[in-house]
Length: 331
Length: 278
Ligand SMILES: Nc1ncnc2c1ncn2[C@@H]1O[C@H](COP(=O)(O)OP(=O)(O)OP(=O)(O)O)[C@@H](O)[C@H]1O
Ligand SMILES: [Mg+2]
Image (cartoon, rainbow over all chains, first blue to last red; front, side, top):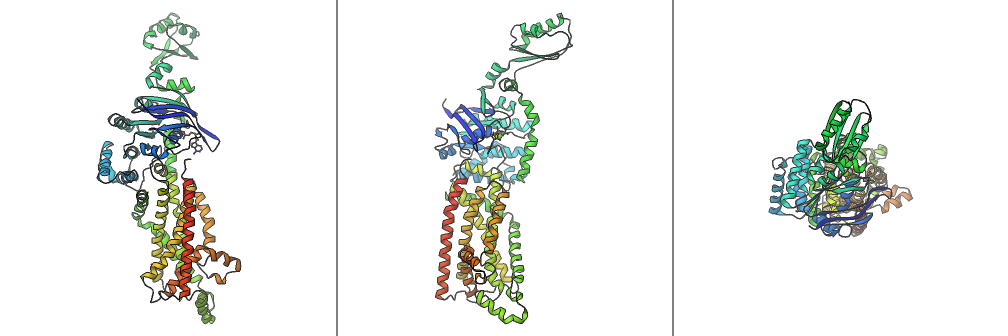
């Protein structure tokens, strides 16, 4: 399938100092859901801003829907829908009025506009609430409204910047369903960013893991997990000799990490090697205090390619704190 | 482009109409100016009662023949209201940028000129309504605005042509300024720095004929002075302008047209710059 987004050596330096995005190249095929996964400050929003004409490109080039972003920004704007990270719907207007304004700005008029607005609001289950002012909406309702506000002109590509930031688990999986539906039923190409591992895993067909403005690795979540994750057996023993060498000798084991009495053994298929591991420990007269094994996750891929865990960062920089800052500013 | 400009202007005005109380602060300020300055700066009060006849001839000679000080002051206060509210009206636009609303316009196929012009239009519309209300309030103040018998609809419109042109020029600058600054603090700082000189280096409160020479020279080129001069000719004389007075009126209006056009051009270029990709 044709590439609907192409980026070649895309670079953004803010004010001649801050290198937010550093020579990244990627492509997105038509009809695909492509995701940028990375921690805070990785350069996700900046990349989206360059692609949707909000930020100038310092170096490199990009095309969206066949148009060069730097040379034909007008044509690009006509073919894209943008759902920003901030909640930007007008608080003082109702849901429908916000949609109406967007429709007029995109030259969707009259009964066509009314029909389209009704259809999109129904799609995200907002048709009843849409007559109320947006300031009475919950965070989830705002995100849903925002999602369809970018779709009135039937764009070819939808940019979604952190579409579920600050939402609870249930509302998030609902959002995922809406996005999947738009992609399947309308063939909409989606370029999205997220710092939620499970979101990237369940929503995106292909992802790129970004950190410090560069793409560390890209591919489908399954490919990445197979290549970088593998299964991990975690084992806690009751003291005794160092078994690192023994575990490394077991067939298929690719890596053994030891911290005190805890061993992390990496291997492609844990269930096959478990008997050998357990028998070995018992034969050496040691006791197993804890044992568990995990299937690969994107977090392991992240750990593998970036060298630190993404979960740690999520914990240190909680979403709710982030949302609070925004709400403060909004006042 | 007109369609987008209209849609965006409509959005702003709709929010404003829904909240009619938002005109109240502006209107109260206008009333305070009229009532407080109208009595404390009133030459008739400043000059002791023993010289009452001198005071009234002073009013006649230097205040363009206005029957009361508030008659003179009304157009000055309207201009001040225009300057202040136009300057601070930009806060809404700074908020639009800070909340990301502006970005949602910039990624849509909306001409940048439409974003700028809708800012100019919404500011102008709000402030002109205040100006009309101020004019009406002045009529009801005791010893307030006294219009000549010959003052008709045409004279009212003629008066407001001066205010509209002044307001348009001011809206062009202050809208461009609001799109350029990144924070409300810097907008307020710049606006505070600009508005006081504009207000006091003009004929808004007193006739420049009583100013020291250097101040008179500045006041004479201040567009606020031109707008006041034109408006006062009609407010004081109504339909009965002599041909030299008519000439002055026409020259003032021409000055204001050029003022608005030049600032429109500068404002447009500045706004285009401010709306470029970051
Ligand atoms: N306008 C700007 N001026 C200067 N630096 C900026 C600007 N915008 C972003 N940056 C910097 O660029 C880097 C990348 O920021 P960006 O917003 O793209 O990250 P992100 O991946 O979207 O992060 P988050 O998950 O927090 O949204 C950060 O270091 C940030 O401080
Ligand atoms: Mg971001």
